Image 1 (cartoon, rainbow, N blue to C red):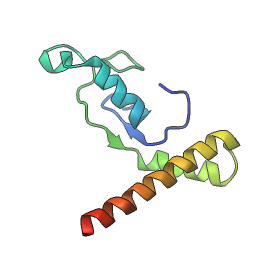
Image 2: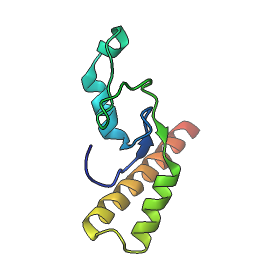
Image 3: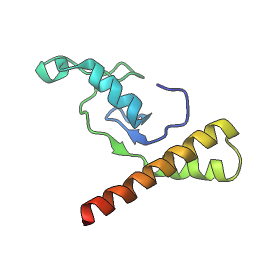
Length: 101
């Protein structure tokens, strides 16, 4: 959907890899129609999505990390991905601290 490295790679019920934010937006734009009997469709295959569940794509994340570490991904894409990962980590640290007291 974004034609870029997925910042948070997930797999949807169509078996395709997406960035979580992009596929979540696609699902949100579909609105309540799928829940009321309409059909939510894959943005790639146009086939019905059987679920809105998004599964973390750990292997894809690891592959992206390796590509970045080896320099196989251009600087702009790599920088954006590394920044996002760092921001996510920092947010988790803050959340853990807040939950701990």
